[in-house]
Length: 145
Image (tube, rainbow, N blue to C red; front, side, top):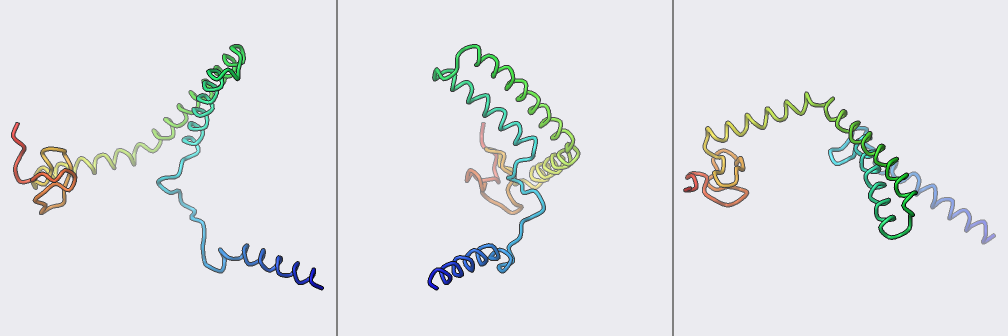
């Protein structure tokens, strides 16, 4: 009898554990977060880490020179492919990157016209600022040369 009660309690605990996210209304986002790696970034990182590990293994004496050269050639080719794929993926999204750069340039120009761009560090402060939020210098006067 005690065995059945124990099994029932464990089963109930497992069911509650599995249903907890549903009960709490927790859901996984379907959109990519800014700090998440894309597939090409992850592939590039894995290839570069594998290349680094082969270097460490060779320097630690775990690999002989023939194995090292073979693995290094293979991993270097994979890393170069991953780097090229990452650059191509970033290039495909260059239209949004160009718009962001243009918006930043426009904000800097506006900051220069309004006079809130820090002459010392170049930080673009909010309109009405008297001191730089980044370095603390006065934004009203240029720094003497």
